[in-house]
Length: 369
Image 1 (cartoon, rainbow, N blue to C red):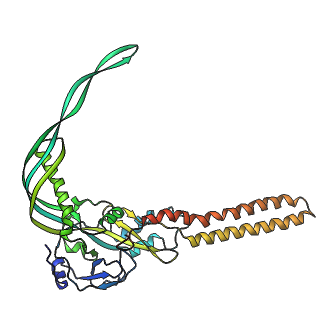
Image 2 (image 1 turned 120 degrees about the vertical axis):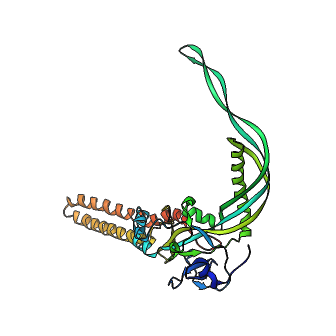
Image 3 (image 1 turned 180 degrees about the vertical axis):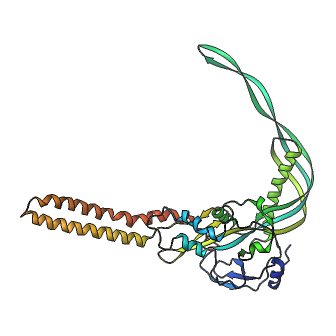
C-alpha cells in the first residue's frame, strides 16, 4: 500500500501524457496535460509551478465523474454569479471568468476491504399501542381512541463476514474546504475511468496517504456495517452499535470529481478565486466590489454637488439685486448638499460589502485554505 512509482510510468498508468508539477508556495502537486502553458498554481494562485521529479502515488483511478458542464456553457453560469454586485471590480465579468476557467479533477480514495468479526447492538422494532384520551367539546367530555407508535428495544449480536467495495474517503488535506466550495457530488453517476474524459483537465495529486486515511475509512465501513446489521435484524432502528472486526484485502484506488477553478483580479491586482462544481453547477467565491470605483463615483457625485452649491451661492448674491432668484438658489443649495452627503454611499459601500464576501475565499495557502 506504501509502494511508490517513478514519474516515467505515469503515462502508462493513466493512459495520458501528463507532467507532474508542484507549487513552491503551497506544496500542492498536480498532474497537468503535457505542453500546458499554465504555470501558476490553480488553487493558491500565489506560487509558480515547477516540474516535480519525485515519486508519485501508484493507486490508479478507478472511477471518474464526467464534466456535466461544457466550456461553452460557462459564460451563462458566470453571468448569474456576477449579477447584483454594485460597483463590481472591473475584471469581475462572466467573459473573463469563463476564459480563465481551468478544468480540474479532485481525487477521493476508494477503498475495498473484507470485514470479519463480531458485532452487538440494540435493535428497535416499531409496534402500535391503542389508547384513548379525553376531549372536552360542546360542553361535554368525549373519549377519543388514539394509536401510538412505540419502539421495543432488544439486544442483538452476531458475526460479520462480508466484503465492501468503493467506500469513498478523503484524499486531500483540504477536502473539507473543497466540500464547502463545491458541495456534494452524486457518486452514483461515476463511471469507470476513461482517459478520454480527462484528456484536457488537470488532476490534483492526493496528499493524504492511504494509511492516514484509514481511520476515516474504518469509520465509514462501520457505518455501512451498522446499516447491514440493522437490515439483517429487520429492525427499524438501531442504537449502541459496536463492532470488533479485522479488515483484510484492502485495495486503494481513486475517484476523480470534476470542477472548474477560475479567477478575477481585485483593485490591488490580487487573484480572487472562484470554484464551480462541474457536475451540479454550484458556484462559490467572493463577489467583490471595487473600492476604487467607489471612490471615483463618490468624487464625481461630490464634485457635482459642490459645483451646485457654489452655483447656489452665486444665485444668492444675485438675489440681492433680483430677489425672486433666491427661490432657485435655495433649491440648488438643497440639491447640492444632498449630492455631497450622498457621495458617502458609494465611498462606503464597497468596504461594507466586501467585509462579508471575503469569508467566501476558496483557497489561499495550504495552511490557511
